[in-house]
Structure formats: C-alpha cells, structure tokens
Image (tube, rainbow, N blue to C red; front, side, top):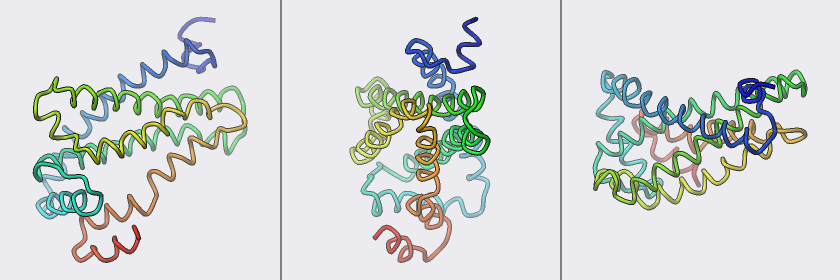
Length: 210
C-alpha cells in the first residue's frame, strides 16, 4: 500500500494519524489566516455597517466574555479570524455526514477520520501559534492579540478538539460531527453575530447567555 493511499484512507495507525494531523495543521493555518486577512476583513471594511460591527465586536468581547483587547483594531483582527474558524468546523463536520447518512463503509469512515483530523490538526497548531506569540517571538503585538481570558477559552476549546480523532472510528463517528455542530450553531455564537450587527440587541444577547 503506497503512502499516498494510506494518507487518503486515513489508515488507523499512529504514524499515519500523526502525519495527517501535521499536514492538516499546516494547511489550515495557512488557509484560515489568509482567508481572514485577504477575504473576510476586506469584505467587512467595504460594508456600510463596518464601524458599528468593529465597535460592537470590541464591546461584545470585553463586556460579554471578559476578553480585553488593547483596542478595536485588535478585536477586529480576532473577530475576522474567528469568522474564518467557521470554515474549519464546517468542512470537518461535513466530512462526517456521509458516515452518518450512508453508513460505515471504508470510504465514509475515511472521510470522517479526515474530518476529525482536520479539527485535531487545527486545534493543536493554534495552541502552538499562541504559545509562540505569548513567548514574545512576535513582539508585543503577539502578546496583545492573546488576552488571558481568550487564552483560557482557547485552551478549553482546543483540548476538546484534539480528542476528536479517537472518536472518528466506529462506533463513535458522530462525536466529532456533533461537537462541530454544537460549536458553530450554539446560541452563544449565534447571539454574538446578531449582537454585533443589530442595534439594540444587548438585552436579548444577555438573556441568551443567562
């Protein structure tokens, strides 16, 4: 069996799983950060509601979640990056759907395993990047975009994500799919988006979080 086929089929061996996680980590780090900088941020800046969005993103993170960025610019950078995170969960979750609808065949299970490894690779690499930034290798700017409460949330979230590969084989294939769905479609995230772009949404958002 060639190496390429072993990777494509997500062979359940330690060396293949680690290799895939590393490949996904590199690929998604490059893709997500470019998506945030080159697509999402420019698109938001072209909208008439961009100033309101930036102000409310900063207020939401500060007052709602206790994540204190230095200014609106840093909060906006994170907000754009956060929007790009959705792509990871959507792709990873979508790869699990065939195994849930069609059944557990070698092909559908390989897709589900790839979906789980996408999550694992991203979560581990994002933690590594944040450690790199907090250690000062990107200067004060790197520390500024990693407030303590954000790091706490990130660690809690990523520890769950890095356990996904262990649930990507029968009979637990639904675990990574459900985890992504909950992460993307929870009232916590929906209310944040609504609060950022709709005036007068503060009281509703607080009632959801309560």
